[in-house]
Length: 493
Image (cartoon, rainbow, N blue to C red; front, side, top):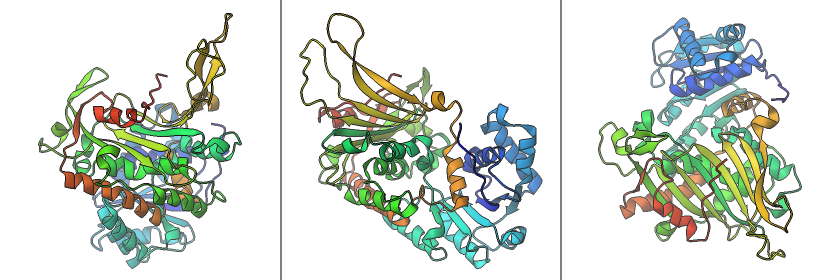
């Protein structure tokens, strides 16, 4: 990458859930990479917090092991690892009692003038207790920030309860509700494509766009998350947060500036403009499924029910497809097709903007079919942007047309790995930039739309349709889009 690295001011980052999977797999590797690129400045500290009884030496060893597991070997320069581990400390704290809080306070007492960020990589059930303990023990300062990991509740009522509890001790300006999809490089480029180029915005509306598809597909099953996932399901786990945020970035009006509240105001308008889906239309606008045993990449995989601890039947969906509509002048009548699922044939996250066909072909039938233009924004893997255009097939003998992509591959263009989303978001927390974090009213507006879907599914008592692992979900998901004359996008490249 050729971007300029701007160092952040000294900080103390306290990670609650510091011995958990998210911390080891994402947070510490991301912080290491930022330190490796000299973005962290002395005397910044990173303090792991959990109930587990261990000393700082043991914790540093566990962080080192995490780096060796999740960071490519060629990046683990000995001096860089040593410097990063020197920043690491550990305090055992019980969120539900007063045990350990005075020790944590004394450990960071010399940093009152620094940015003090508390990252709550814990169950949301603990958000209330942790934030009130922070206040009770005098750990919050004017330069404090508190980061809340998803899921933020399991419905509107629980989200409101969490938000109100945190708001008791912190103003909105110090609360950072994280959705790591908003930190992805390609998601940032969606805004750049729209608002830094004159080419797209004039045709970014119902007069020119036929429909929009957003797909977030995973090969993996629920695996170690089975306990959580069976109480959540695909709609809560992916649609209510990640996919709706992507929809907002596609459909929102240009903000007045790239400032946090200006951006979030426009996303909120989209969420409030979503056509309600409820018992009256849910059968025609939604599909839910659950994977059965099958094969992924030639390897047999078990059914969802067999991955649960009790190995029993479950009505939790592992696949969702929906047809949404944004009821604004810009988007009225344009369908947004959303789908996500586990145990699908490939791991891919992408946004497809399907433009309308040319109003009249002047070439007759000899040139063949003129495929409508498509803009495909690939979030993962192989991040990039493709614009599919019609061109003349080379050679004599008249005009014959072929659809070809203009391909902007990030790996080829920028010659290096893209920073992980958490790298950007963690640095934004330290800088105090909330643009890529969700505001309270955004989160609650998303639940206002999602709750009636969940309630309607529950009242209908209809079990999720089965689909074989390694396929693209239930056949009803294909019918959902094909009854409108469209097909799901599949890019063989």
